[in-house]
Amino acid sequence: MNAIQRLLANGSVRFGASVLGLMLLISALAPFLGTVDPAAMDSNFINKAAGASGLFALLDGTSVQHTFWLGTDSFGRDLFSRVIYGTRVSLLVGACTALLSLVLGGGLGMLAGYFRALDAVLMRVMDGLMAIPAILLAIALVAALGATLSTVVVAIAIPEVPRVTRLVRALVLSLREEPFVEAARALATPTPVILARHILPNAMAPLIVQGTFVAASAVLTEAILSFLGLGLPPDIPTWGNIMAEGRVQFSQYPGNVLYPALFLVPTVLAVNLLGDGLRDVLDPKFAKRGA
Image (tube, rainbow, N blue to C red):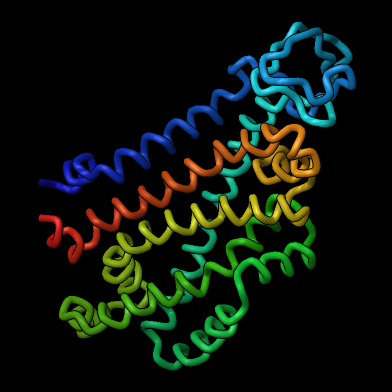
């Protein structure tokens, strides 16, 4: 079977891709799912139960007849709208964090693995970063840089860079001794060309797999930071922000915490299962084991 057939035959890939595709579709269709502005508040609809309806005031001063499918929060905002729009933010954070960590970690790992003079210096720096718990490092970076979407992405990505760097370095250390790389050096091929044409393509499969795990971790870390009040500003709807605002009244209104959690849990699970499936298909060792 070719790679596409193996991917389609893998149950983890099918399940993970299906759930992730559903979440992407929900986030893309958020304005068309009958929701109102997630920032709109109406004091007449504070902590309403799921299914309540009424004339809801919008930010432009107009009012519409609206049904609150998941109820409202303590500020009179539509929970369904906030959870749906929060899907956009959480997926964006996961994707951007994975991309940034792969670019930085991949570049540093290639340098460390190919140039022996840089190896010791770069890896000691990576070891130092790995000695700091990831969540504490992210909290410190957010506190230092400020809570914006870009800084939160950077703060979550930096702790992931050493893990990606070590992975790529290990791959490059073995690839640089392969005959095709030695032949390219013998032909006086420039080093950047060797890295781009011969080493990077052979490291892409493990990088893609690692990227899925980074994305899942980033979605969860962003929710943790927001839940602790250290993530994105409260006016930006994220699953972590929604749960943080609902925890004060959890005993009376548990849905304010449970509804975003019902989106967060399957999303993180789906991305992790997708990564497991991609590893089984793209990694030759796992592919042979499953054959």
